[in-house]
Image (tube, rainbow over all chains, first blue to last red; front, side, top):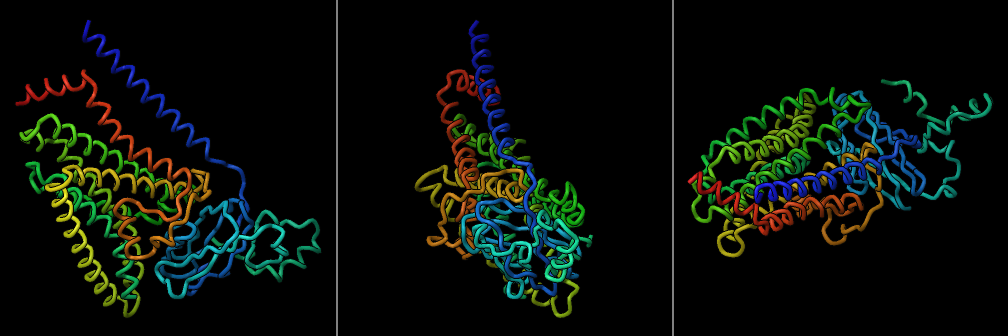
Length: 167
Length: 276
């Protein structure tokens, strides 16, 4: 009888632990949001970031696609953004940053920290003058102009359209 | 390149030497053959080579999030094994008293080298990518090797100093400091995992709670050391903070809770009587 009581107590505790685990697991899963994020492109060439400044909107999560065009690996690193990722030669990688308050967040190439340096500038949407024409803001979602005239106007300004076709 | 190699080596090797110091200190009182250390180093080197060799493939898997997913799982595994190691040592120390004959058990002989191997595999793979990537560059070999030697010297020194500090505190002040430090180290590893999950958008809620860079800068020497020791993060998010506090308090609270349970203490005593 005593043994049965002990077992039921153990089961009760076990059930409680399982319940808490489920709450934590589903709770964390619910944090994940799969909605499409604005995309920004960054390139590493000759151990330099191009563009050196990426302007993103305030309080918005964005996708940062980084291309490494060197023949050596590079590690995108940022203490301000809490991001760190190795990019193999001639490969691309994707990381998500934000939502962030207004400010300047520096990043660097960990393998070449003296040359590969840049920053993410977070500005309110209203302060970003022409997001479509801003070289630092290659936002794929906004790169679908209504008419072909707009394409011809935009193309010379956007220096990173070719980046889309690599890899 | 020399200074950069030293910094990179320190960043990746420091957690390994800190963990080794924590494990050796936590097992000092136990009659455990030191072979676990060599097994851990050997398995870690194998794991490191395996990850490094497949680094490119892994990083391109799962739509470019393969590396984060794998590393996050490995960090979680490290924490779970540390949890087993911690609970086992606390329970056995508590119920066996000064008789430590049971301590040299298969549980510790499995957990200790496994934790070490996983940490070597995770941290070593990053450095190996840098080393192999720049090894073939002209004039790079000398600063690379010199950087490794210097980094190794600094890491070993920090590891030894930490070991003697833990031993001193364990003997004179609190006998559980090395074990609690081990739990904090595990929580720090989980903190790295949550960072990686934020990075691939599997975990949301990036609103920063505070910025303590003005106090201890994360990129400073002390910042590196504290990050390796207990996962110091100058700019944590709410999710990270919640996860960290939970994983630190859960095992300590769990042990305190179990100690008060009659059924648990009687079961351990029976087990002890049988074994002895």
